[in-house]
Amino acid sequence: MAKPVTPAAKKPLPPAEQARIAELFARFEAAESDPRTELDYDSPFTLVVAVALSAQATDVSVNKATAKLFAVADTPQKMLALGEAGLKPFISSIGLYNTKAKNVIALSRILLEQYGGEVPLTRAALQALPGVGRKTASVVLNELRIEPAIAVDTHVFRVAHRLGLATGKTPDQVEAELMAIVPPPYLTRAHHWLILHGRYICVARRPKCEDCPVADLCPSRHLFVRD
Image (cartoon, rainbow, N blue to C red):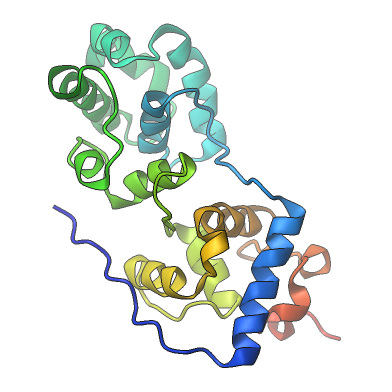
């Protein structure tokens, strides 16, 4: 079982740094007040499946696959009836599809046998499902506004470091740091803002600083822009 992430001790930040972080997230909110996952879903079950399928795959590729899959199997009952053999052709374009098919069918069976076909919306129960690790559970709980969580993928990891929000060397360390310093009003949305910012603005090779709404608050700006 994955070890829980222990929140970093909340060391008092200098007033200027508190103001910078608050302004940074206020600008993200001004640009998009209700950010959501770009994965397509219409129920907790389809959300869990979509997020599980998205590991090491793009949201675009997952949405393309699930558009056809969820048209025929959008409940645990229908997914189990489809079976691994029936599921694989729908997701064969997604990486690790054999393992993912096995996990999706297994979790569908557990949902039917143990939870009456409903998705248990607690972290411990979610993480106990096949193919649902801490990051997947965090995405689901945060997307459904059940529990503030910041799932750290490559985008969040990169943006958190560039914006001076974290220094951790592992995703768990960065998650703990972010959870400790993001102002409470923004916690349920910070995950999406950071992912979207990394996906479209603060990209890996050549960040689009000229289009960045927080460029003047970014301690890494000098690495990419010559004033």
